[in-house]
Length: 63
Image (tube, rainbow, N blue to C red):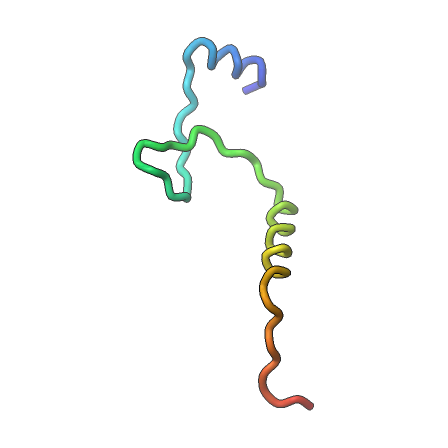
C-alpha cells in the first residue's frame, strides 16, 4: 500500500492485521508491521558479534 493510501486508510480507522512474530511479546502485545532487513545488515551484525568475542585458542599439536 502506498504511503498516502496507507495514511488515508489509517485515518479512516483501518488497522493492519497482526503479523506472526518469533519474539517474546508481553500479554496483549502484537506486531502490526515488520520492516524489511537487508542481508548485508545481518552480515555486518554477525561480523560485529564475532569481533566482540574472544579469539579461539588453538589446541592440539603444533607442527
